[in-house]
Image 1 (cartoon, rainbow, N blue to C red):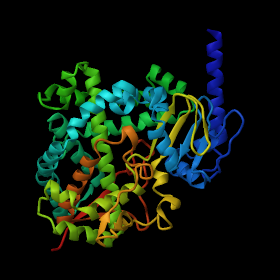
Image 2 (image 1 turned 120 degrees about the vertical axis):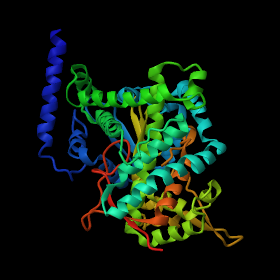
Image 3 (image 1 turned 60 degrees about the vertical axis):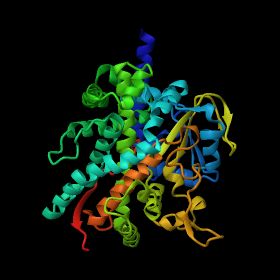
Image 4 (image 1 turned 30 degrees about the vertical axis):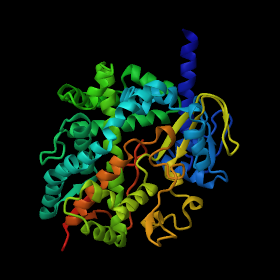
Length: 487
């Protein structure tokens, strides 16, 4: 018993020593590695801006790949190389899995949902999920579910804000809109989040907090710290437990009230009857449908405000369609589509994604990967690389997504390969909900911009800051005023 106590005392002493040293370590410090502690000082100094800092590291690397080490943690490789991304997501897919580390860190939040499992469990879930994304389902989703939520809830809410000249948090509104939609299409359940009374605020706050606190587990110097806090029910782990309890209360309601013709029924009929497992399915689907789409739209409206020429072109395209664009009309809104792609290039909903090596490997750029190492592909960094997007990569320019057909001389949309534009992942785990996301976003854009202008309430020259978490939300929300558009 004495030796574990001595080891724990040494660990705590070492942790406070590291923190004491790092207090005077400048945020702009270079990425230096030291014996025993590796790159810990640089990581700790930049802990509040990890996405931007690691992006800079990738940009400054000749191979677009960097290696970071910390005590008590696996070495981490971070890459922005399309060749390496293709290697880990497709060519050598079996070697790079979500892995036990990620599963353990996120288990209390996402459990055994599709984003947190590998192998047969992942394949089985993916197959059952795929039914939600058939062409028939997508058409119904956009022409009935989204259209109803838009016309009966979102537009009236924005009209009231415009009439009263009030400031609203558009990020929160879009999250509520997305939550209603995803619950309706997947579970045939209407949480009615986007109503004048603004119900279920506890769930939204709890879901966000659980997401952020789960992510922070990755950043502790050793997993032992958060595991001890969880055992003692202290600090951040106590808050995570409380947040998860709020989330569970909501997911149980969805589970108990779902009909017999929804996604959950498919899982139950396939032999998945465990209540906790079914709630993991609900939470994972909500995470995918609520957070990513709403984050993309939030940044989209910010970028439109800064680029009025783009906004005018989108409005021209919207005015060519009917008041309630159909599925086919939405698919034909190519300039809006390009603008959304450009938004997610600069502000990807998921800024960084990771895999764990289950065997030794050598990446195409020569980086040696040992079993157990974490390999991350930096989506945010890749969208801002000059060598991938040109010298004008900083510009919000939807035109970069078009090319001229040499035969017809017509301009057409051209998607980038998924290993350069990794917003929707790639390879076997490519996002099933890509088409659904675009259709929903384009329907929102068409409905909102036809009637309103979104004006951010920000100080001159200030830029929204990104939350360091699994999704690229704005810190503090997105306060805006809604102005009635003049005909």
